[in-house]
Length: 193
Image: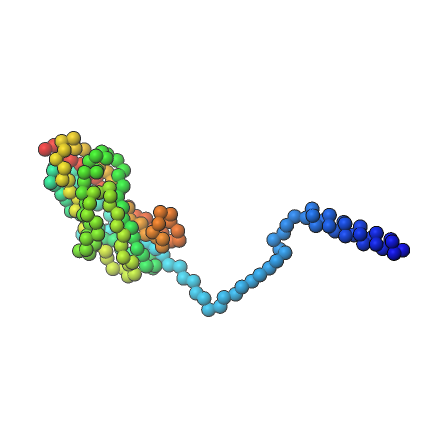
């Protein structure tokens, strides 16, 4: 009788062990809950608007500079507005989209923001960032585009490029969190001289 009880217990343990070895894992085995009171999470909007400084209308084309000769330059302006509710910092850069890379590389650009120099150098090296913008006041950008090269190989050349304005919580290479990007197209060409 005692031997039968031991056999039943051993068979039960063996059967239970076999069932546990062949059982799949479940995610309902443990449960934990943490409650944080009096915390507040707020998400705002992060948005930029590129506007013409003449009439505050949205703009898609900044420079349409046809007929550059050596020592020639042109000036254009742009109003950047923070249209979302979250504070922003923006990052500006230039990218060639079409045309002669030699002519694009020969163009110089100078940028001021509310009368403060932000960048001066070659167009395709353009990179600058802003201070944090917390209110909806205008950030007026003035761009001076110049052609200061006498190389005759640059006659009758075209350069199409964009100016890109990006804002994000993390200004690194990968957008994380909230972000926004706006771009404005530009066209420049040289003439015979």
